[in-house]
Image (cartoon, helix red, strand yellow):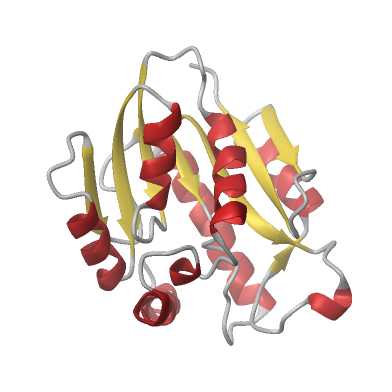
Length: 212
């Protein structure tokens, strides 16, 4: 990790630690508007999981307090889960929340410590704070390479969309071009790429599937 990336991630960690302190272990505590939209995002990301697989492993990059784990437990059978976050406060909350739960663990880190069948990243590309578009795009591209490297069967991520209404955009948020990222994933990672942009939020989800 370069010094520039470490500095960026330190800023992000402080930002989300502040949200957790203000709102607790809730959707707003990870900077989402509410539980309903958080669940809708999880549904899109989890489309990367093959429903015919009896068991799987998954890395949750930017896991926050671990809300995705609850979503997975409601809809899937046997799986192992690793939550990864740069905020020590988030990992502390997640560890306490799921203490003693089998098949899950949480680490304070910028990347998973081992590959998994799937990797997901929800919301980690949104809050750029004072970083330029160029700096944030470099971070985004580097993180996609990381997701590809640590995911055996595929990965999924979401971004705020550049098609958002101009009068609703915020200067501290990053709005990605879905067509650019679809093309990047198609050319760099896999021929099997899906762009989901039809679920009534100002964002999109990309699924990158790999051949088993």
